[in-house]
Image 1 (spheres, rainbow, N blue to C red):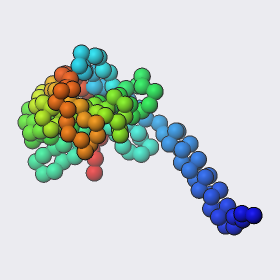
Image 2 (image 1 turned 180 degrees about the horizontal axis):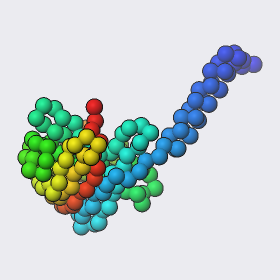
Image 3 (image 1 turned 120 degrees about the horizontal axis):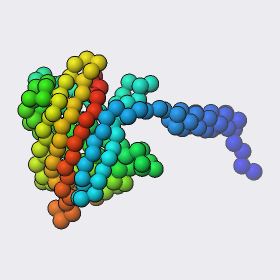
Image 4 (image 1 turned 60 degrees about the vertical axis):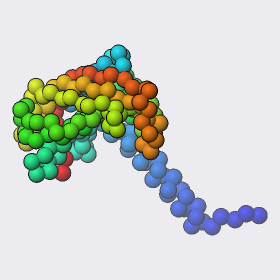
Amino acid sequence: MFFIPARMLCVAALTGIAFNTTQQAMAQVQSAPIGTIEASIGGKAYAGETRKVASEGTSTAGFRTFGPVVNLVLQAHDPQSERMMHNVLALDISVMGSDASASVTAGSVSYWPEGVGKPFYTSDEGGGETQVTFDTLSLDDGNANVSGRFTTTICAKESYFEEINMADCLPVEGTFETALLKEE
């Protein structure tokens, strides 16, 4: 007869309770839209939202400063998607300056139609030069925001460690308008 010590049963039960509680808590995390990214990806319309999770003090649109360089990360989630991490479009922009006249020093666009861990598209590694133009940019405490437009070409990758597939590329152009959260 197989015997499981009571201590192991207690640990297993507590682990199960903790896991279930964590899943329930994650399901209850509330986020609110703080902006939009609208684009044409390979000729198909895309409309996503940047979001803020007030209870965690986080956002999918934020910025960090490194001396004179400011890095903006804008990640939009499709509100029509069944899964939060499917159909995600992200812009990563580095600038010198803190207003709409800031010089863009680097930019990239990534698109995950089926979520992280699945094939995705990126402008990095030869996909295409990302051009960004700002209509507004303010990094003021409590009122940081950005708006503008972008254009690039994104190409497919099966995974982060695979070579980019230059035969599977899509033109992308779009606009963004969102509040920003300063990341520490």
